[in-house]
Length: 316
Image (tube, rainbow, N blue to C red):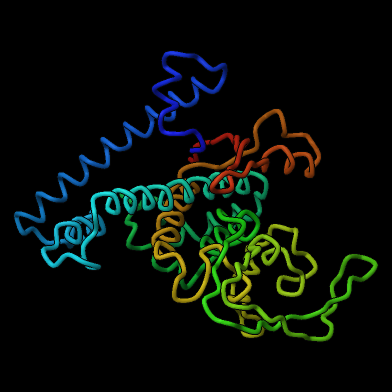
């Protein structure tokens, strides 16, 4: 990303140790991805020209291509560059994020067998023994008996795909804030409220991870994996405004419902077929060491699990 446009051509003649090989591999990856995206566009453009309905499995792509070919022009028309840029964003945002989040979720299944048992019991209510083909339409009860969904949300609380977001301030604003005190055992006590003036033109950084780990909203056991904290009851309602894995407000992630749906389907299907177990080399290690090894991560555009190794044992 940081190398100038002319560097790939020069580096094919004059080899720069380490850098030339990486730039060449990156260039190849982008060229292959570009060809793949153009194939998708060509197929979608054919359906637009033929007047086929957008209510297909590629409705989003169909709408983008339709905007790209709009005769109205102006703000209602996407240029070729904008079309490909949007498709690239959807590929990244719709696949890499979910894949990495599921990597953390699967490690947490192995680390917390009691939570896995609860999820399996919920899955079995939807897909009883001997039910044959799994009907994913029956997963709708997960949103009224939501342990599997709560499990995934708790994964996102502890390991959000994006750990921070930057926002440009377009108008002068005053934000409410609050002092707090830290007790001897690390407990937080709310203190005096105050206000922060934020002038137009400022850039505000939303620290998602810090918010997700704030005991004022999530309790003193904030570092523990506890899916139950995302299940409402008669006396408890989980704090919606303190959960920003998909951002919040009118500009929140448009793929939020899709991400929940596909992730719940994958986790339910996995747990239904297999028992997710710790790797053998960690079986008899202390729990804290197991967590440290299996939940390692690195940060790029998203939070990436680097050691999500588990064993699968087929259920009988």
